[in-house]
Length: 203
Image (cartoon, rainbow, N blue to C red; front, side, top):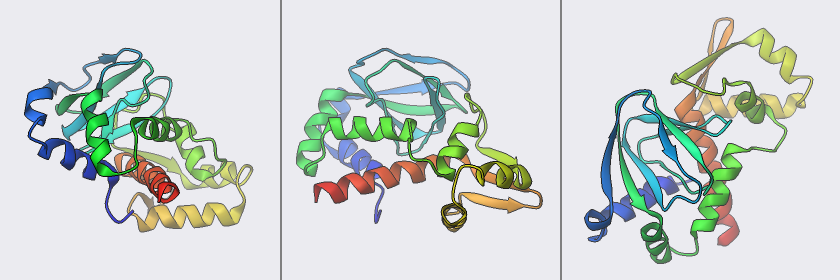
């Protein structure tokens, strides 16, 4: 995308005069567990810090990203001291009306697709292989193991193309015998792809 949609939404949310009246600033310690009930009336926008969201899945959310649209029960675990805005979902829905044709339901679909990537490619393979409760900002894997496993599932052309794209985006690095993935960058890239597809579909 030309600009990250989540950052654009964050700026629009916070620049509205009503924001200070409806949003609450919350502070989380590292490894604190935040329970998010099913059909919660709030979403969380990360102002500073990094968190993982897990409901038997992997995800990573950093500064400027907003989570909690899926409407299902989940948990948030900060990877460091984190500051977030707790924002009423109804307020977000009102703001989206002035941004165009995007709706809360679209954001829920994007979040669910991001958490449950179904396409068979090396990106899905990376997500599946990552530990279920990721506590670090990077993840290393032996190149030989990656090549041996991925070639059984994904055509070589797709794999080479995706690996090169991840390198170009400064998400994946070759370190001798290992590949290293910048996890927050990787997940941010996935979300941007989904937002980009949505906006192209609408426009």
